Length: 283
Length: 256
Image (cartoon, rainbow over all chains, first blue to last red):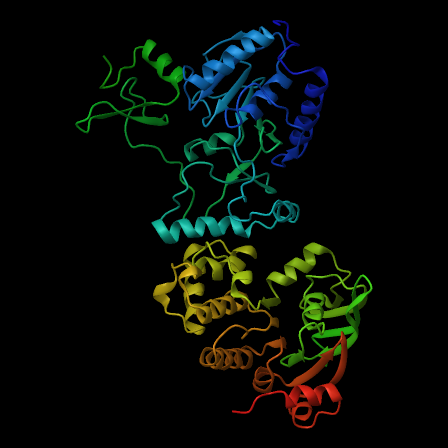
């Protein structure tokens, strides 16, 4: 069988997911339950993100997938091919050309513009999960705005490490109301969440939750007055393109302690290299 | 003087079975009330109804709030009741594990209530936590250790510190000395008595240990089968029990 409905899912399912997305956009940061479907990939590989992408894609869209910032890793390639085959949409690796970008663990370095949709793959949508195991209790804490516990986690970080050591999935407060897990993006990306021109949608397939940030939403990273939030990255320039403002991956290049730092956003790095920027490790 | 807590006709049924029936009393600021009775006499049910953990089938629990004066806590909204639970009320569980977060350091445990009411300065929170550990006789060097590394008595004292850090006015205690050996019990009682007197706390203590109420409580209620069978000043009830069950209870205490 080679014929699929557009973007794999049937129309009723997409309708159900769109309703959840609209509700999520209406209540920024609130986790909307939805009837997550089985997808032809294992949980943990982006089943939530894929379902959200399937629901928002139209035949005219241009689709981009990144995994840890890269366009060419297994997860990114397989999801891109999946929608190429089931939706027949155009695909790209250029951030500015894409209208729908599905991402795992990163926000592109390039500033997104209005009309774009950023879809996140979320493993665990509940920011309070590892502090309070009962779902009934975490829901009550969200509804009553009882977020003291979130600060207990940050307190523990400081008491153990001397600074807030949480470096990814750093909790944020949306429009002064809901505390939200921004999915496991590095905290370097947290400042980009707020006031973004693009729509941000978060899909958790196994946990059956969708939440969203409409454009230009206020998003604040939690912190203490005497230990303010700090967006951190490796203190190096990119070895390939020389960028000093991008999030870097550390690569081990030999067994003698050699290493290099490169942009995790491959599209950003390649664009800079073709514009003539050169890092110290560039061939 | 307005009573701090005024309980009227509290009744809680579990199906056909009675948890507690038609309990009424007033508690005045600075007063410590003991509730004694055998297992299954309804004293924990009563305590949980008063502290908002259970919803009674009938009756009123009127608390004299700081801002609005006397309010019925049963009919007030849940956010308001939970706010009281974090600020003006404290609840000390029999098992410290029920009242502590075992995966969080001692300092974090004490600081949780401060952060829950909006404290956002790490240094201040830590100073207050350390100060409170000192008040309950836990060495300040243990502030970053988890309660799992503490002895039973220390866990219980940590639970008390965690509850009293926001300066509550009313403390509910459910068998605070249960499961501790007698010398640790004695120290804990001594500590509790000091804290209650120094902070001018009102407290309701549920226990089956008559020695605890003799030391801590001003007044005493004896419960049997969900009903209050005798109430009065502690010394009066213990030295001259009137009801047959109170007499049995007092005479059951072993003399060594």
